[in-house]
Image (cartoon, rainbow, N blue to C red; front, side):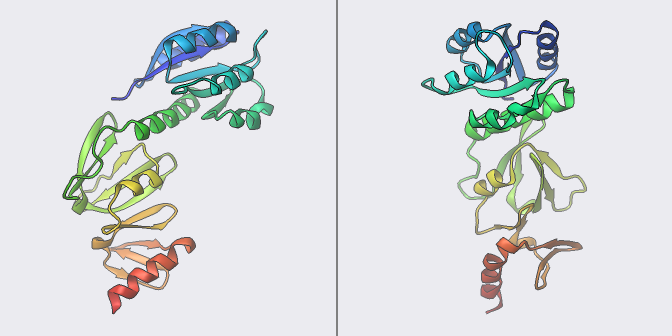
Length: 243
């Protein structure tokens, strides 16, 4: 399981303690230190090289936003940043320094977990040491909960996007597999000879298509609409089939 090394920075003791508690109850996060000011945090980030920094914005001497700009000027791998603040007018400025997310105080653990999961997904996509497709294009590895699961390509019927996750529907299985990866990232791992993106939320197995209409694909009783931006590519494929 990928574990992200974290630093929490906040000049408010109660807010800092809350972030620390949330980190400690999240399996894929490891707290390596906390700081109550951005000046000390700058030195710690250079020394400890964390994967993720939970960063308050309004702090004396050096603000969290100023620290984020300094982090961007560092050489080497940069930590991801999630801002934690009581003020919502920093959101646009936060994205200018490539913050992954922006948590508005008071935030819940659910909101914290959702933001942290985005960083986990980015990390696993960048550091995936598994060969995503076998040499003979017969299977793919996907992270499901806390395991890498081997999935035979021939068993996949279609794949559905659910925000930050994908739902992989399998033949002869009532339970689909849920994996924390974007549909675009998964699309890049799949062989284009066997799978096609037909909608912003769907990839289908070409071998499992049982019928087609002008604007839809059928996989047994499941109907999937072909999105506008995918119609031309799908029409080209259908024309080849019908020759």
